Amino acid sequence: MQITVLKETQADEARVALVPESVKKLVGMKAAVSIESGAGAAAGASDADYEAVGATISRDRATLLANADVLLAVNRPDESDLNALKSGAVLIGFLKPLDEPQALKPLLARHVSAFPVELIPRSTRAQAMDALSSMAALVGYKAVLLAAEHLPRIFPMMTTAAGTIPPAKVLVIGAGVVGLQAIATARRLGAVVEGFDVRAAAGEAVRSLGAKFLEVDMGGESAEGAGGYAKEVTEETMNKSRELIAKTAKATDCIITSAAVPGRAAPLLITEDAVKAMKPGSVIIDLSGATGGNCALTKPGETIEAHGVTIMAPLNLAATLAVNASQLYSRNLTTFLSEMIQDGALKVDLTNDVVGPACAVHAGEAKHPRLQGVI
Image: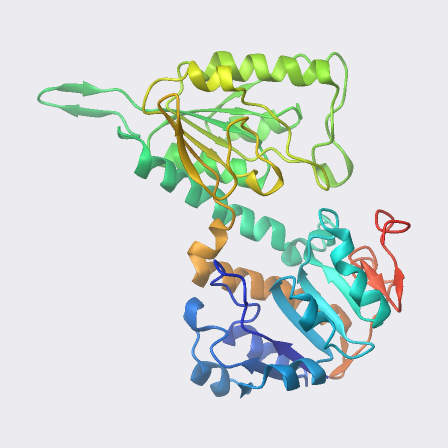
């Protein structure tokens, strides 16, 4: 079985799908691993590092693609790369199956099997394969550092001979993995932190980190969908949420927001009026920019100033921590791929309780329920 890793082509991408540590494990499973020259350079892994653990290095991208039984990627490859894969090949990576399903269409015609890491089930058994959570933890951490860098005041309380400086106040919207890591990091830096999520069950996790949980009256409505993800709620609940956030934002120095619904546009939670009411110099880090953003003024991928407030919407924060992000992602992929390796051979078993649910397309057909009839 030939496992292939290419150099990522996305402009802001520094991660690599496999690090040498994982290559060594795969070679131990009797798999052959080929790496495009320079693929791991930005993540601290040289060609020599890969060769030392048994990988083959090549500069011939076309040949690498043509021979790949399994292509491991960080981001979905360009259509030209997808069209170069042979029939029966397997593609694993961040493929955006629910946000951009039509981009998977070329794989149907070529009978390439696609396993987006976004579809890996959020089960106990699959925890070590959960690339979304791995990247989210790093993003939550880095978001707080960005906020601290751009906020014109310090996070912790400081007592000096000239008097005491009170701690900064931080509001974290969305208590998934990103939000909880942001809460923990902001707390470690000494800020007073509040957390908000429409899922009432998230309150326990927020409080366990020493933050105050802001609750909105849901009127008996549940905001938790399959796998613990948030689901869309009524406009009445959204309005209540916006009002609570706007009220809290007046006294907040920094807002970090990551509220998202899989396969849907990010919910609008911070109105322009809420931004206007914030203190001059305040900072908003909108981590949902890729799907539109949680703030009405967000410009995905840009940093702007509006009404005296700095609004940032970085699109690939995980790549700014390329070494650790690649280590975690590589381990996630290796653990998932091991479910399809038997004596060095590739075996795609869709009855497997992890492999089956994670399959987007296979043998020329859409397999995931949310893709059937769409592509």
